Amino acid sequence: MKRFLLPVAVLILAACGTTNNSNVRDGNQYVPYDQRDGDEAVVYFTRDLSAEGLIAAYEKVCGDITGKVGVKLHTGERKGPNIIPHEWVEALVKKDLPEAAIIETNTYYKGDRYTTDAHRKTLEVNGWTFCPVDIMDEEDTLSLPVTGGKWFKKMSVGSHLVNYDSMVALTHFKGHTQGGFGGSNKNIGIGCADGRVGKAWIHTTPGQPNQWDIKEEEFMERMTESTKATIDRFGSHVAYVNVMRNMSVSCDCEGIFAAPVVTPNVGILSSTDILAVDQACVDIVYAMTEKEHHDLVERIETRHGLRQLSYMKELGMGHDKYVLIDLDNGGRQITAAQAAEGLKPFVKE
Image: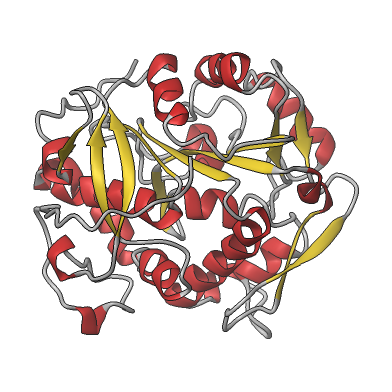
């Protein structure tokens, strides 16, 4: 299915925050839907948090997924409680992607996935054994061009990335210690950069070897430019699926040490537009009640994570306006506020 836009005026109501486009570069300022401009992309939504829901969301956006396919997945630290269930991914792969491989890279921080050997042991512990898993920087790295970036002219990625014709970004949407939130942009930008060179470029600036010294907006921009290098390489042969489940303020890199989940489960969103799918997830979070979204919104804004969205738009990576299609109700158009209605408090499974 080709990317397409609809000239439909759809108001996506959000329950929190007011600003205007003069603040679009401020990563702690949420821009409500009616203050955005440009065309609309299409995002699909289901409340069905199951293998069947994952398959339904993916099959709406898979038209250009051809040839050799890499499924970009955050496979998580050992026994991490919040990652996408491997049984769901196994069902998707067996039904729709029988020849695909999960693609990953080693980490920049020292943990369960820092070396290839440790990474492979972690994959086994977490159940990623039903299809090939390609640790793309296991052998080498290569550089992809960054077009239009202000921090990079190239990005170092795992050398195996170019072995694939298409990519499915299968993302657990959640908070993130440094990025504010982790959506498709983070999954690709950090997850395809190799563990020693590319990730170091993103997390540090010259003369600042400590990753925590980098300014918030700069980190978001560097991460986004890394994403752009990868998705430009694949062109239209990318699909994005975000799973809004077990949303801690912590990333899956924190494994069993992740902060408790207090945000309600929502559902699964998919699109062929990376900005639209991440923006829709953020809009749904902001449309929750104060009690439901307080911790996650605080994490996003204190880290200036909204700069991910505005910078993707500036780089021409997608659209922050969209039509949200409800797969559970005959494909009718709904708002982010309607998607957030009636959410049940998170209950540990």
